[in-house]
Amino acid sequence: MTSGLSPALAGAYLRRLGIGEPGPPSAAALFALHRAHVERVPYENLDIQLGRPPGIDPELSARRFAAGRGGYCFHLNGAFALLLEALGYEVTRHVGGVSDERASQKISGNHLALSVRVEGEAYFVDTGLGDGPYEPMPLREGGCLQGGFAYTLTPLRKGGGWTFANVGGPFPVMNFRSAPATMADFAAEHVRLTTAADSGFVRTLAALRRDATGMDVLRGRTLSRVEAHTAPVKRELGSAAEFFEVLAGVFGRELDDLDAADRAVLWTRANAPAADKLEELEEKEKA
Image 1 (tube, one colour):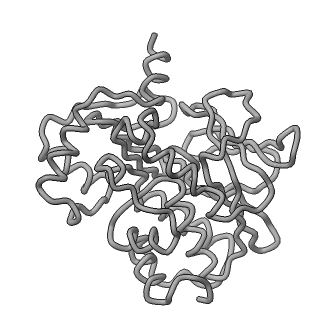
Image 2 (cartoon, helix red, strand yellow):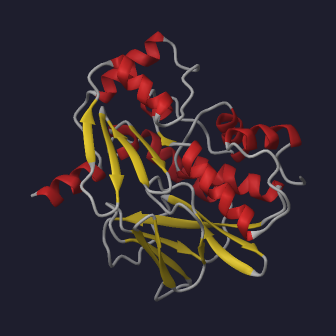
């Protein structure tokens, strides 16, 4: 391991993923690492809801993941990129942007995307979308089905880059530039996303976890199980005890960093009216 992660931290990170010895870089190992990451490290915004958003330094994110926390795209893909580099993979970071406009070609800068080259092939890699792919996709035009969910990659019409389309998702498009980026390129947007009053990360408590057949989604105190070709199965969490049991048991989020005051704030936030774009789009689809 020769990158910014110490062997001890890389080992702790891998243990969080349930992987003992990943072996040398290979497509098969990359796929296994990606699957483990989206299954075991949740997309979540608890610290943002508590008003103490963690920074996006990838080593800090790796330490948080090793300790049982989660994060959002700048944390998840930032740390995963560092881990992959420590394991010998060739990783490129890209400025991206998610959109609810299916024909959008805009790149807002609110997402960090990754590509990884291994065994002569480039792959689109993304553990930071929450409802994104379960496994990497070859970075070439085309589509695939993963657990019944349809995904496509197409080149952007101008400027060099790609559109990842999640056909059934509430944010169906994520565009990203081909040009390499650094973590500094996301610093200002991270501040906005984690502090602005109109940011969905600030307005609505959320956690998401992907697996082979679907995803678990928590918005406020509404827990949903989403699988392809079926209506989401939803239930309202009726108590703070049940809420924290779900965070720990369903999403694998360790709670030992939360004191009684933190838990009270989070339960209050969970009971606030849902105000993020996913909820709005779900309501529109029902209408």
